[in-house]
Image (tube, rainbow, N blue to C red; front, side, top):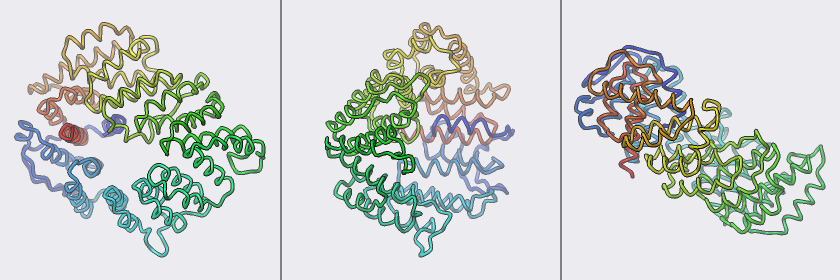
Length: 498
């Protein structure tokens, strides 16, 4: 579960004073969710098989039903045992069939479809969404599923679905996206995809995409001709000469990336105007995202010098980079090192890598990178609560404190002069001491939601399953407790996989 999602979940549940039973087979009127778990045994020797059940045991006490939904869907998506994912799906469906939660009957359909798609059963996924009928369900949105099918290497099958399931005015744009996927996953299918694009302006972009994949330098002359022929009444981006030139070159660059043609990428960067206007921000963001999620540090070093965005323009690199989390530590560190040339995007790239290292449990590498890349010095220069670096530092510091050792923590703390950071560090220190008291059975007054979040992060960073499980079990609020056990379960799964 991402830090942002977890924070939202922690912040939005009401405080409900409910305890967690030591061992239960539970059926509550609103949920009727069956759970069988021995809490004492699980805390003494935490295993994902029982911490997941503790998440569900807490969820059955949460009145709205969102906690059970979140837990089941997290386990369906993340359990490393593929057969277990089927069992989670079956339990979710059985619960949804009898639960009185608003909207659960409708929600189960897209969840089941996504589960089937992850397994590679795309015909089953389309069937679940009502997209296999002669008259497909008009309310179903097929584009995401079609693109997922193409990414799974089923380009020809995905292409055939476009004309049947997608509205006419959206088909060519979707085919252009499939073409980019085909260049990366199924090059033999690329020409067939391009041939199916009807709109003449979209065909020009398809030509640029394929030229980038081939490294065809003659495309530069064509792009200049397209730009000179731009007219205000034409389809974007060919309604403006400058936009036509820049977006065509961006498409060329994405084609080079898709085909893994670094020489063509160099040609595209040499031909494209520098990324130096506000209009270039989105193009730069798209390229950064794909290079980051694939760990292409060498390519980032080439792109970096071309990034000359105006002051105040911020790249958007957070969306669609989930697969970057699976990169090995050395590749993540290399991406951060390559950001030195990325100008205004440098800090965002490094901070993203730092957060991903923390999520992987690579706390030592994250701490060293924070210092070596100068982000510590930057933290001391900026206003703590007005910069992204402040959010990143909070995530990093909780992990550093949890991991230790104390001498290392103290040495780093001594180098930080930022007032906001020092206040946050003092707060974490107080809550760490309180965490130890709670683990020892001395809870006192119920902590606030955000205090629980900090203590749980520190406990998880420590790598001590007993400590993190004790902290989760001490939470009175059923929703918070369920969310905490979901986090712990996923952490234990991740550590087992690695």
